[in-house]
Image (cartoon, rainbow, N blue to C red; front, side, top):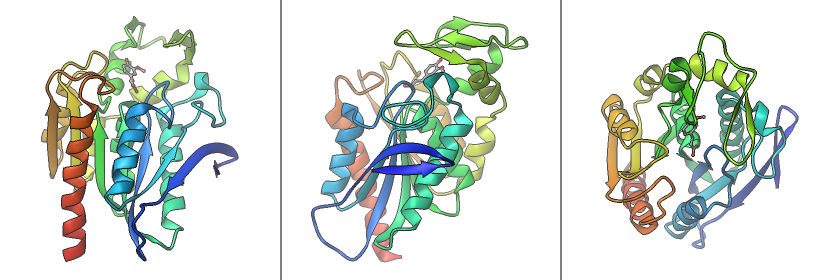
Length: 252
Ligand code: FER
């Protein structure tokens, strides 16, 4: 199905838990930079959540997968707007109880930023290897291993898979102070990160766990950026945390 955000079609998939009930928590799941909603780790988390009684909404974000927009033109602002649109869609569903936002890497950073904007709507954040160093890298002139002059932003820089990324991506990223967003979110946060992640250092999650008022951190020893070695452990960390949230939800 498609969910439209300001005229841009977002390819999305809503999946329900097996067990039938009147209401379910909904987890909105965001992929990373150059990723898409069918990636192995995205599917693994989503299907586990369906098993334990959550509905999930996965989507391809602007310029990615089968959604509209050009990769070259995507920015963190566009992804944040996409995330808000997906949350609004979730709020329109009468079977949805609490809404959680989950994101991997750049999608994890997007979840951190959107979490602050939707702090009164989101029951919790699940941050998988969140790429929280992107804004500082953009200010320093270092993204994707490509150095540039942060005061004279290039029209484009080389990105993965022979693609190019427009300078507006950098302009937007430079404007974001991640710690202002983490300070604004007071709900429950789970961080999951492999300590052998070569794309996003585990320190990003260690720092974020300290910045949040109410965060838990699961470091997966020997795992990489997409949980290539221990996907089961990453999924299990999310399962345990979410089961605890659902028990507390019931009590409330
Ligand atoms: C970067 C390192 C990692 C970067 C983006 C990422 C745009 C994102 C990784 C991901 O989403 O998987 O320098 O710059």
